[in-house]
Image (cartoon, rainbow, N blue to C red; front, side, top):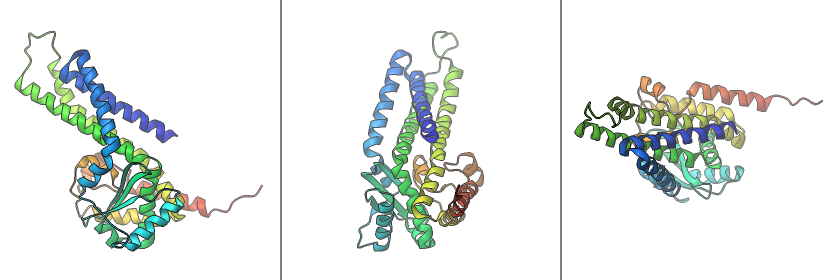
Length: 291
């Protein structure tokens, strides 16, 4: 419940930021109305098209049960444990070991894994990763992240429009009734950064819950902990080229630089996630007291 409230508040902040920058670009009540319309349209668009956009961004290809029987059987088995409909399965042609889920609800969902993750993870660790992604589907995180990515993209686009306006139509010092040029400049610089930070905060609030959900589905928190450590060590060496707006969908960060990965990380630190999973393992293995 706390995560849901926090996510709703962060999405509201994103929408408010979008309306504010629309006000700066267009001005007056018209700008506010246009901002509200843009926010509504982007939310509606991401609702119906988020899965297609994310899959296309990573060049994911659908896979049949005949082409990948082991993967298909694993996803089917874990979906039944999670009481979820069978999602579509995709493979991303990349050696970067990663995975993600997408879709607006469990009935319209997909799980995608890279060729790299299939090569380096043993079966129990891959199960932990798949169960993590299925938890995102069950919690509707895939829709939330898609909406956040779409709104953040709209904010960046409007900020770029505003920067063009500042460049080609500079404001005069005598224009006392016009917008403050310094305020406009700060909006151009800070709005995309704020949108990115809010988007990443939304993603971070969901990762620990998805890790815990994976532990419940598989009954093996340590397997996912080992997988996260292995993925974190390997993913830094092999970049996964795609639109950065969709990085929060991935199970681990795709940034290769240490500084950038810590500053604009879409996920909590791997060490913190591993510690949380090991605590869950201790709780699962601790004897129940009888009173």
